[in-house]
Image (cartoon, helix red, strand yellow):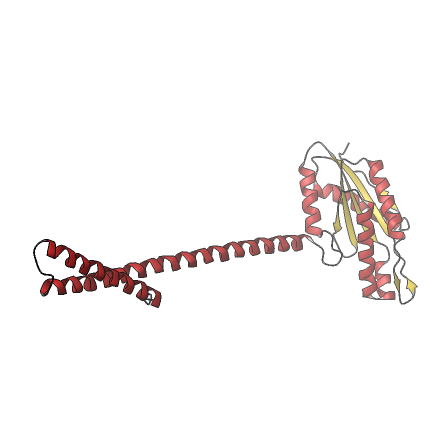
Length: 263
């Protein structure tokens, strides 16, 4: 049980004093009116009864009221703390959700996020998808010649050029070490080819200088186009085949591969 506070004792004392005053006043006024004398046991009872009844009753009442107010304040504070915890948890969930979809090096989408978007797009009927698969040319040579820091800078530059070359509704991200992908909805073969060439030219123009030497950067691109609904594996396999064709043909170029069964 909570300790009775000094404020409760003070309020109880005032209430008891008022009760005693009221009781004595009634006796002093009423008894003479009834023909009696307000003295002896009757007078003392008018003093003792309020003390014995009003003191504990008022103390208990004020104490209970104080406990209710304290409990209400604690509950309000707990609700505020809970709301704050919920907001912090929501913010943390948002941060973790973004981190789970983000490639830590380039700041773009990671492999899981890209393929999740590709899976959803392939399941949506009535559209045409273009998938571009890109790979940085001679990337191991960049790392061996200029170091891994230069290689990381090259990947960040490539990702930035990629984002600046595609449309606002297109999806792009890093799906491997130096491999990237672009997903375009409602895209024809000619439109996909134009974007692929724009990306290739933009990457070739990325200016990265390390220890006074320019780091050469280029990409090979393979792409495929399919009507939806389609199979993710088939679309990716076709785009990847185009990438190998581009590399085998000399790199820094674009190659198209059709998807089996696609219109």
